[in-house]
Each structure stands twice: as structure tokens, then as C-alpha cells.
Length: 443
Length: 94
Image 1 (tube, rainbow over the protein chains, first blue to last red):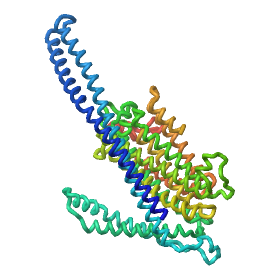
Image 2 (cartoon, each protein chain N blue to C red; image 1 turned 180 degrees about the vertical axis):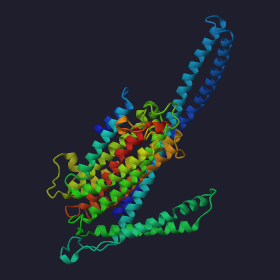
Image 3 (cartoon, each protein chain N blue to C red; image 1 turned 45 degrees about the vertical axis):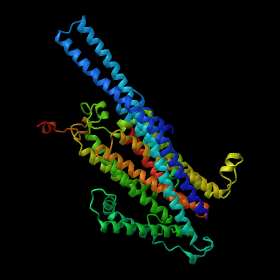
Image 4 (cartoon, each protein chain N blue to C red; image 1 turned 60 degrees about the vertical axis):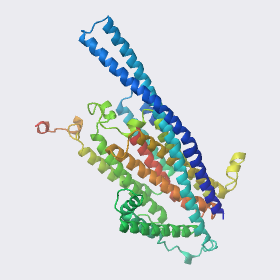
């Protein structure tokens, strides 16, 4: 019942965020944006007119042999002054229009993103509640005898097989969805079916994995080398992170390889090519203004702080001598060890969600400024930062499960390792951002 | 946080050469990455096998960077003299 209430609460928060931000504030911002369009068009016409006037006066002045005084000279000076004034007004009107447009996009994107994330969070909470309700009520740590050794789980293999099928059929899935939406695409029902079956297998795998993890199990220890004596889950997580490093390394190497060929503003400034620059990178659009760089900078803080909050969750879970703080606010925020762990995880979730919201706002601004995925620079930027964002989002989904577990079964010194091993993944995502931020935003 | 401010500040400070900004970005990035890996991921206190596991892909990253260098248009002509001792430049000029 509690999960149903929380699921509905999440949906209400998402609906409110959408209503207030995407409909309410965004429509006001849209009006403000529309109000800047007519002044912009007037300023543009005025600028074109002044430009023509100046060109005519300049030609007359040239034809007259560039006199230093007289009627022709004065007319040219007046036209030049008029032109400069018109350009200033045009420039001001253009900036006002762009600022109003970006402000509208900020609110609209934020509202939609929060609403979608809340729908996903609510769905996850409801599914987790369902799996929790169907498991037997026995004490997961009651069987400490030698005969109760954990014998592994097939759930990860089931989930991976499901994802494999889902990805195999994904192009057909996308084409079919586009065809159903009335776009000019031929439906591929074979691919669509494979993808849907794969998705269902993955959900069953994830669900069963949750059920097993909620029930608790004994930690398997590696017997052979090189990880002899170490927890198998920890060794497995590190090997998984190793493969993740290779994925991000391939993004970086392709970006660096392309970047060494491009004649960007940075390359012009460093004397590596002769200007003008012929490739615009995301950093060219982001790094010159604190307003455009702010989402990326805040995201860096958010991820690093979220890494710290998950460390605090682990520390609290393992601390058998944990006591309530003397500080009233802290005592309210963290009244018991179980709730303290849950609240630290919720703080991590909030910071990760902030990252996704700011990321999409930033993307919407870049697309509005014409930096889309159709260029080489756009392609590598969106693929690399998108892959990272996807990792953050998947981490948030796992975090939801952990919050659910912290709220129901609870984490303590016996099962706190789950936070530690997930924390390794979360810290890796932070680590990848530490490289992505300077490479794609500042360089 | 201070490190991020340092990175952003390096880009904004006028007068710094792009090579100095590069050095700051790479240096700060390495310090941050070390901090996260050593303390948050507690590689510092864990058995060395985990550090070896984490460093294993670095070998491939180095190979990829080497490949980038070799396939770059400046890979030979752009190298400093100390990198190409006794190199026969006449061959390149031809």
C-alpha cells in the first residue's frame, strides 16, 4: 500500500511540475518570446535599410573622390551614424529574442523532463512494490548454516539476454513506431516483436533479480586467482567497470582524433591552423558565457556531491554504533539509522535527477542555437554526453530500487555491501564526467 | 568544487595561452580522477588487484592515444626535434 501511495505521490509531483513549469511558466515565457519577435523584425528591417543607405552614401562619397568635408561627406557620416545605431538596436533585439527563447525552452524542458522522470520513478516503485508483495515473509539472515551457501543467480543472464534481443530488434521497433505515428517509414513487425519480447524478458530478469536481492543472500567469495578471497560481486563490478572504461575511451579517442583535424577557434588561437575556424564545437557555444556554462558546472558539483552522499549512506549502513545527531535539523532529517541510509540515497537520487534535468535543458539550448546531431562535432558531443547521461539514468533506476530496499528491508552492516558495489558504478559515472566536462565543455 | 572553479577560471582568464589552459585542464582532471578512484572508490585501501584491474584498460587507452598521434597529419612534421633524432627530413620534403 505504501508503494502505491508513493507511486501516486510521484505522479502528482510530475504532473504538478509539468503543469507549473511546462504549461504555466513556459506559456508566459512563450508570450514574452513572441513579444520580442516584432521588435526584432522591426530592428532587422531598420538595420537593412540603414545598411543600404550607408552603402549608397559610401558609394557617392567614393565616386566624389573621398572628400574630407562638404555635403557628400556629411551625408556619409550621417548614414554611418545611423547604420551604427541601427546595428546596435538590431543586436540588442536579437539578444533579447534569443534570451527569451532560451528562457522559454528552459522551463518547458525542465517541466517535461521532471514529469517523464516521475512517471518512470512511479512505475519502478509500483513494480518494486509488486515484487515485494509476492515474496515469502521469512528472515533473510536467519539461515547462517554452512548448508545455506548462495548458489548464484540466473537473473543477470536472463536480463542480459532480454537486452540483447531488445537491441537486436530495436531498429525495427523504431521504424514500426514511426510508421504507426504516420511518418513515412515502412513498419518492421519482425524487429518490433523481437524487441518487445526482449524487453519483457529483461523485465522478468530484473524483477527476479530484485526479488532475490530483497530476500538477501550470502556473499560469494572467489576461490581462484587473481581475486582469491575477494567478494565475487565486487570483482565482477570492477571487471564491468573495466569494460565501461573502454567504452568511454573509444568516445574520447574518436573525439580527440577528429578534434586534431578540425580547424576550431581553439586551434586558430593556438596557431594550429589559419582562421577563420570552419568547425563549431559545443564548447565554442558554451564556454564563453557563464550562463551557458553554468548547467555543466552545476552538474559537476551535483555528481561529486552525490558521490559523497552515497559514501555517507554506506558509512551509515555499516556503522553499528550510529546514534541520532544532537543537532535538531539533522535529527529530523536522519531520525534512525534505517531512515538515514534511505534519506542519503534519496539525496543522491535528487542530485542525479538534477543532473539529467540540467543536461536536457542544456541540450535544448544547443539545438536551438543550431548545434544539432547532424554535424561531426554535434554527433560526437551528443553521443558521448548522451551515453554518459544514459549511465546516470540507469544508475538512478538502480538507486530507486535501493531506496525501496532501504525503506523496506533496510541496509545494515550485513547487507551494506550492495550500496558499496553500486557506489563503485556511481563513482565511475562521476569519474567519466570529470573527463567529459573539460574535454567537451571547456576545450 | 575548488578544482572545478579552477578549470572554469582557467578558461575565462584572459592572457593565458591555450597550452597553459590545456595543462591546467589535464592536471586538474588527473587530480580529480585520482581523488575519486583512490578515496571514493577506495582503491587506496583495497587489495592491489583492484588497482591492477582498473589500470588494465589504461593500456588500451594509451594505445588508442598513440594511434591518434600516428594518424594525425602532424604526427611526423609536428614533432619536436628531440623526438626525431637523426631523422632524414629530406625524405619528407621530397
